[in-house]
Image (cartoon, rainbow over all chains, first blue to last red):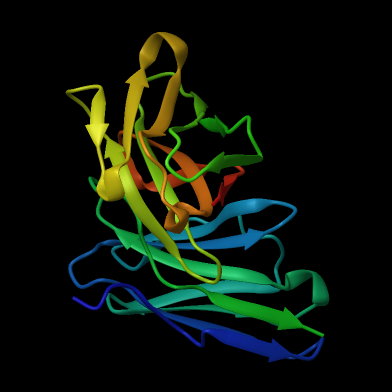
Length: 112
Length: 114
């Protein structure tokens, strides 16, 4: 398996634009997690899905953030409108209820 | 809710010296514990994990960690550090109902002197 695949690896956008981050989890994993990493706050769990259903979105910082998982092999994290303080590395991870999270390479987002 | 503390923000060791990175957790029941390593610009790679059983766990790259319930600790060790070990190390804890939903420490940056 190729592991968790995230795209794009880098994204630079202007404030106010919509940004969509994409994730393909490892086949067979029924949990998918979105994390954000910043210098100030470290690694934070934003939201996670189980069997494509959002279970806990309490980490989503604002209504500008939304996440979807239309099927078992694809998830998106959308920010609309984006702001400079959203600049961070966003990680997608997948797993089962009984394994650790397997992380993708991350998307480095810069909002200018 | 669970939490993780990594007391050392930055550690510097000489190549060939031994290493110990500290991790303390807070969780009422038996936790799942992990150590991840992150090289610059990369994702997180799992070094080792503890779910149950033997409290001394072996991982990749010559790392090991020991779970001490009485001290709520899960310290990472390596007997001889290589220059390629320079990276940031994260300790994480998860509950026994969802091993993938982890709470991470703030990380320890390891610098290796030649």
